[in-house]
Image (cartoon, rainbow, N blue to C red):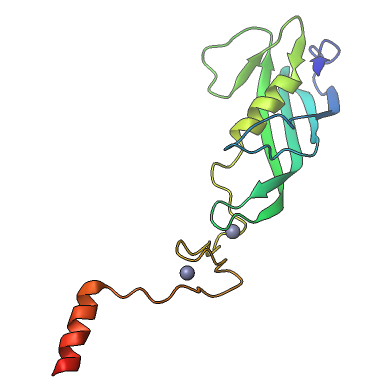
Length: 165
Ligand SMILES: [Zn+2]
Ligand SMILES: [Zn+2]
Protein backbone atom coordinates (compact mmCIF):
# COMPACT_ATOMS: atom_id res chain seq x y z
CA UNK A 1 0.00 0.00 0.00
CA UNK A 2 1.65 3.19 -1.22
CA UNK A 3 0.06 6.58 -0.68
CA UNK A 4 0.80 9.54 -2.90
CA UNK A 5 0.65 12.71 -0.82
CA UNK A 6 1.17 15.11 -3.70
CA UNK A 7 -2.40 16.41 -3.33
CA UNK A 8 -1.84 17.61 0.26
CA UNK A 9 1.89 18.29 0.15
CA UNK A 10 1.56 22.05 -0.31
CA UNK A 11 -1.85 22.68 1.25
CA UNK A 12 -1.84 23.39 5.00
CA UNK A 13 -4.88 21.78 6.64
CA UNK A 14 -5.32 19.19 3.89
CA UNK A 15 -5.71 15.53 4.90
CA UNK A 16 -5.52 12.13 3.32
CA UNK A 17 -6.84 9.15 5.22
CA UNK A 18 -6.19 5.52 4.46
CA UNK A 19 -7.43 2.10 5.38
CA UNK A 20 -6.04 -1.23 4.30
CA UNK A 21 -5.49 -4.76 5.50
CA UNK A 22 -2.36 -6.84 5.61
CA UNK A 23 -1.83 -10.56 5.79
CA UNK A 24 0.90 -11.49 8.27
CA UNK A 25 -0.14 -15.11 8.67
CA UNK A 26 3.37 -16.18 7.67
CA UNK A 27 5.05 -14.05 10.34
CA UNK A 28 6.80 -16.18 12.90
CA UNK A 29 7.22 -15.24 16.53
CA UNK A 30 8.81 -17.72 18.89
CA UNK A 31 8.10 -20.61 16.52
CA UNK A 32 4.42 -19.71 16.24
CA UNK A 33 2.32 -17.95 13.64
CA UNK A 34 0.13 -15.80 15.87
CA UNK A 35 -1.26 -13.43 13.23
CA UNK A 36 -4.10 -15.64 12.03
CA UNK A 37 -6.45 -12.73 11.26
CA UNK A 38 -5.81 -9.83 8.87
CA UNK A 39 -4.09 -6.80 10.35
CA UNK A 40 -6.32 -3.77 9.84
CA UNK A 41 -4.53 -0.47 9.34
CA UNK A 42 -6.27 2.88 9.73
CA UNK A 43 -4.55 6.21 9.52
CA UNK A 44 -4.29 9.73 8.40
CA UNK A 45 -1.75 12.11 6.89
CA UNK A 46 -2.35 15.74 7.81
CA UNK A 47 -0.55 18.82 6.54
CA UNK A 48 0.00 20.94 9.64
CA UNK A 49 1.59 24.25 8.75
CA UNK A 50 3.34 22.68 5.81
CA UNK A 51 4.58 19.62 7.71
CA UNK A 52 3.06 16.24 6.92
CA UNK A 53 2.13 14.29 10.05
CA UNK A 54 1.33 10.62 9.55
CA UNK A 55 -0.49 8.60 12.18
CA UNK A 56 -1.63 5.04 11.93
CA UNK A 57 -2.96 2.18 14.01
CA UNK A 58 -2.39 -1.46 13.11
CA UNK A 59 -4.85 -3.81 14.82
CA UNK A 60 -5.64 -7.46 14.90
CA UNK A 61 -6.59 -10.32 17.17
CA UNK A 62 -3.64 -12.59 17.79
CA UNK A 63 -3.77 -16.29 18.51
CA UNK A 64 -1.37 -16.60 21.40
CA UNK A 65 0.05 -19.41 23.46
CA UNK A 66 0.82 -18.59 27.07
CA UNK A 67 4.51 -18.87 27.91
CA UNK A 68 3.69 -20.22 31.37
CA UNK A 69 0.67 -22.49 31.06
CA UNK A 70 0.69 -23.21 27.29
CA UNK A 71 -3.00 -22.31 27.01
CA UNK A 72 -4.14 -20.86 23.68
CA UNK A 73 -5.97 -17.58 23.89
CA UNK A 74 -6.94 -14.66 21.68
CA UNK A 75 -5.51 -11.24 22.41
CA UNK A 76 -6.44 -7.95 20.82
CA UNK A 77 -3.27 -6.27 19.66
CA UNK A 78 -3.12 -2.65 18.59
CA UNK A 79 0.05 -0.83 17.61
CA UNK A 80 0.09 2.94 17.15
CA UNK A 81 2.70 4.59 14.97
CA UNK A 82 3.36 8.15 13.96
CA UNK A 83 6.00 9.93 11.95
CA UNK A 84 6.71 12.99 9.90
CA UNK A 85 6.80 12.69 6.12
CA UNK A 86 9.39 14.86 4.44
CA UNK A 87 10.51 15.33 0.88
CA UNK A 88 14.13 15.30 1.96
CA UNK A 89 16.05 14.22 5.01
CA UNK A 90 16.37 16.82 7.74
CA UNK A 91 19.13 16.49 10.25
CA UNK A 92 17.96 18.67 13.11
CA UNK A 93 14.58 17.08 13.79
CA UNK A 94 14.46 14.45 16.51
CA UNK A 95 11.06 13.05 15.62
CA UNK A 96 10.95 10.07 13.34
CA UNK A 97 11.11 11.26 9.77
CA UNK A 98 10.23 9.18 6.76
CA UNK A 99 11.49 10.50 3.45
CA UNK A 100 9.00 10.42 0.60
CA UNK A 101 9.87 8.66 -2.60
CA UNK A 102 8.43 10.66 -5.52
CA UNK A 103 5.74 12.04 -3.15
CA UNK A 104 4.85 8.51 -2.11
CA UNK A 105 5.07 6.79 1.25
CA UNK A 106 5.10 3.02 1.60
CA UNK A 107 2.47 2.69 4.32
CA UNK A 108 2.55 -1.10 4.26
CA UNK A 109 6.24 -1.02 5.06
CA UNK A 110 5.71 1.47 7.93
CA UNK A 111 2.82 -0.50 9.34
CA UNK A 112 4.66 -3.80 9.05
CA UNK A 113 7.73 -2.48 10.87
CA UNK A 114 5.64 -0.87 13.60
CA UNK A 115 3.59 -4.04 14.02
CA UNK A 116 6.60 -6.34 14.25
CA UNK A 117 8.38 -4.06 16.73
CA UNK A 118 5.17 -3.86 18.75
CA UNK A 119 4.91 -7.61 19.26
CA UNK A 120 5.36 -8.66 22.86
CA UNK A 121 8.33 -10.88 23.49
CA UNK A 122 6.53 -12.49 26.41
CA UNK A 123 3.04 -13.84 26.01
CA UNK A 124 1.01 -14.48 29.12
CA UNK A 125 -2.68 -15.39 29.28
CA UNK A 126 -2.80 -13.11 32.32
CA UNK A 127 -0.21 -11.15 34.27
CA UNK A 128 -0.57 -13.45 37.26
CA UNK A 129 -0.74 -16.76 35.38
CA UNK A 130 0.53 -19.44 37.76
CA UNK A 131 1.76 -21.67 34.96
CA UNK A 132 2.26 -25.40 34.95
CA UNK A 133 3.83 -27.40 37.75
CA UNK A 134 7.24 -28.53 36.50
CA UNK A 135 6.73 -31.80 38.37
CA UNK A 136 3.26 -33.06 37.45
CA UNK A 137 2.32 -30.63 34.68
CA UNK A 138 -0.86 -29.53 36.44
CA UNK A 139 -2.23 -26.19 35.26
CA UNK A 140 -1.93 -24.39 38.56
CA UNK A 141 -4.54 -21.82 37.48
CA UNK A 142 -7.28 -24.43 37.49
CA UNK A 143 -6.04 -27.42 39.48
CA UNK A 144 -3.78 -28.14 42.37
CA UNK A 145 -0.43 -29.82 42.12
CA UNK A 146 -0.57 -33.63 42.12
CA UNK A 147 3.10 -34.09 42.97
CA UNK A 148 3.85 -36.11 46.05
CA UNK A 149 5.54 -33.71 48.40
CA UNK A 150 9.20 -34.04 47.58
CA UNK A 151 11.01 -34.16 50.87
CA UNK A 152 14.45 -32.65 50.98
CA UNK A 153 16.84 -35.49 51.91
CA UNK A 154 18.48 -33.34 54.58
CA UNK A 155 15.10 -32.62 56.16
CA UNK A 156 14.21 -36.29 55.89
CA UNK A 157 17.36 -37.16 57.84
CA UNK A 158 16.47 -34.56 60.43
CA UNK A 159 12.92 -35.86 60.70
CA UNK A 160 14.28 -39.35 61.23
CA UNK A 161 16.58 -38.11 64.01
CA UNK A 162 13.69 -36.39 65.74
CA UNK A 163 11.57 -39.52 65.40
CA UNK A 164 14.28 -41.70 66.92
CA UNK A 165 14.57 -39.52 70.00
ZN1 LIG B 1 -1.06 -18.85 31.26
ZN1 LIG C 1 3.03 -30.85 40.70
